[in-house]
Length: 108
Image (cartoon, rainbow, N blue to C red; front, top):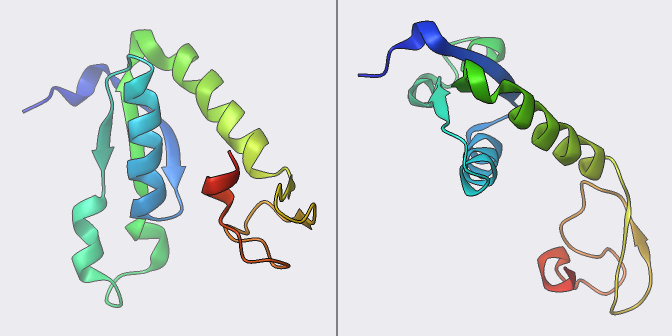
């Protein structure tokens, strides 16, 4: 069991998939990450949405680096992207080009 007294919450994810993606990003940068709340998804529909948030926690000595990486993620998430297949601008929340249906992941 991990001692929570030396861990600090750095992010509340909208859903479990985002939390696991961000956990992977932070771990790839050498940070230790703990997720809390992912097991509550089995109660979906019975609990309020605010209770179902999955939170990311890091050790206190890694807070600054985690915050920098997460700020970069949030900045990028708000930016539109341009499809290399057809050149069309797509909003940041689109994973597939609305014009030609090319996946965003294929473009990076």
